[in-house]
Image (cartoon, rainbow, N blue to C red):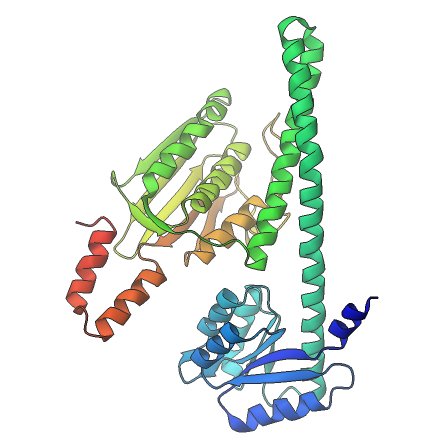
Amino acid sequence: MSEDAEKKEDAPLRLLLLEDDEVDAQWVTRSLRHSKTLKYVVSRGETLAQALELLKKETFDIILSDLKVPDAFGLEIYQAFAKNAPGLPIILWTGNVLDEGVAIEAVSKGAQDYLIKGQVDERGLLRALAYANERKKLMGMRDHFVNVVSHELRNPLFAIQELVRIVYNSVAAKGPEDQKNILEMVMNSVARLFRITDDLLAIAKLEAGKAKEVKTLFNINDVVREVAGLFEEVARKKGLQLKTALSAEVVQVCADKDKITRVFTNLLSNSLKFCQEGFVEISVSESPAEVRCAVKDTGCGIAPEELGKVFSKFEQFGKPALGVEKGTGLGLSISKEIVERHGGKIGVESEFGKGTTFFFTLPKDSPERKKLGEILTAEGAITPEQLQVALKKQSGGG
């Protein structure tokens, strides 16, 4: 180990503590001093706003957060930290057993752990923090491995793809049919490897918070038509009807267009893969607050016991149609990450043997635009009525 690495290994861990109760904060600080293996430096915020401000100014290794502070409560606290400190281990700590359900939900969304005040002792706290630190190291190693492997694979794959294409073009004109078939199989296999590496990179970037959204205002129906057009030939070859059901000519959303296109592509590809006959339909509808998008198929459906796992990484369900390649098991997980980072929700409804509907929602107004409007209203620059008119116009509502 190098001298720099040793220094880094010995450096104290930076802990961000969100706690408004002085007694509880002192207990945490006192407990940390008794750690024999790890040293800690604590920065404390008494409100969520203070803690988020500290995140902007300092670098932290772990977050230990109460679930109830003067300016925030429950899941919104975890969501704020997850958004502003992606990849950082977050341990939730609550004094109310009734909040345990909220803490468990946060853990299901990615929180490291939760502790209940009065039930956890000093040893339990130190153990939870040590586990969080180890998890951070492992996640860092995983991300590094995925990035290195993915990037190292892409260069030789690109070279193979180009060389095979050159040979194929020379054989296609006058070569034997069996040689062309073999070269087509090689090109298809290389294309599949490219898709696998792209999925691995995408999920690694999303989970590490490195996939930034570039939000613009656009007509989501244009995305639906574009994606449907890309899959028309696939549906035709399988004898399937590919339909769209759009509630209006223009449905405006403020989102990252490329990422939403990827969600539609993943869902439509998945439906076509498991649909043997009938149709696949993409629909878009809207309410005053959100846009609802769905991909419905008349395929084999998903067994009830499998429904809870469909958005998990590397999970695959059912048997694809004959001649259709198996996926990576990452498409639905990637879609879930993208939708939730846009402030939306994604879900699935399925009847085994009859078909499946995947759906997701997107807010019509981004939190960033709402927050700007709230600031202008608070400062008296515009009235609440003017804000509503402006947001409606920006969303294409006239």
